[in-house]
Length: 362
Image (cartoon, rainbow, N blue to C red; front, side):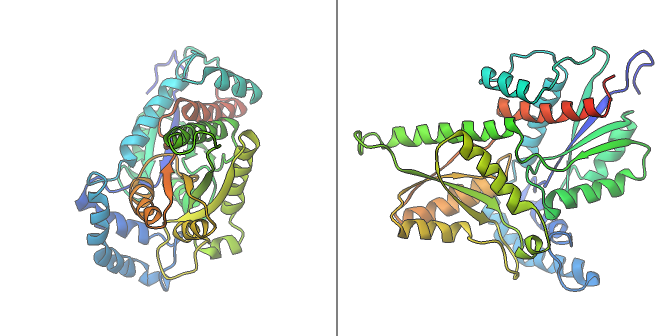
């Protein structure tokens, strides 16, 4: 518990998907994933878990093969923990000089009118909760409560809201948190936050510069013709038909990027699974379409992901790159946001603005 002379700490909970931390964890991870009816309904409700068990049993060996190609586990927990550590340090310091793009951070921070002044008696504790693998949300909430935290900001690490991602995670959080005396505020969407957009613009600019440098020996007298392919995690089309704002917010993010940097861009969706109709076009079909139109240089931006995991390291870096080579395309990917300073500053700004609006800092 906090000292009587100090203000109680404010907790921050970062919510993410989670991923298997070993090859042995792949099967139970898949079971947890397919057991969630908010992602996909597998027959009547009473058959959801039996079918999830069947899917995880039949698929885990193949999926283990994918993970074996990227180090034998998902890096998502390590990266999310690193994000939490960097965010906690940022929240607990008054220093304005963080990051490698200080002037941009200051300018955009001033535009969003955030205060960098944190009372000396106030401190933040940032934790991580995962939806489908450890540390599970249901494991973390009791630990947060036992640490004496009674005020909690919950930030979904899915910038664009969907019922299948943020919705499912927050539903689980609220179910568990209802058992504890705790004041919680949930941030559901931040797809157009200026610092988040600036972080994406930053990696796109750097990706294009590196791409252009690699092309200099081919045609020094010509501007490199690089097309940006925003690849988002797919969803069943039914979600969008029923009013899910995911696609609208994905396009909103891209529109904000396009206002800041001149690009030729396309949008596609990856990581579909299951026998239902998914969002189109799929990334593999979009690559085939672009190749047929004569496009040769593609920079992929994993638009709905804020950290590396199997969708970036295997699907894009291995699967789609191999397909691109077969199609005569030169495909590269932007770096993921991970712990990039401007991205950490974006999360800090989001949290501080909400903490101030809640009057939690006096």
